[in-house]
Image (tube, rainbow, N blue to C red; front, top):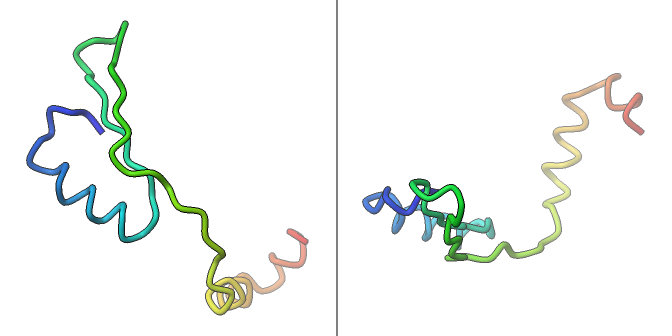
Length: 67
């Protein structure tokens, strides 16, 4: 996320924290040194297997080709 989008950073940071997604800010005006800043780190978690199985059922026969 570009650092100059200040009005959206707070909202995005809270959403990323809630869902365990990482957020990195950078200076898009300086391509040589974008000055990356980690605002929220991603959190490793197990998937909800109810939704995994539900999605695989929806795939039907195509899911058998995947596995």
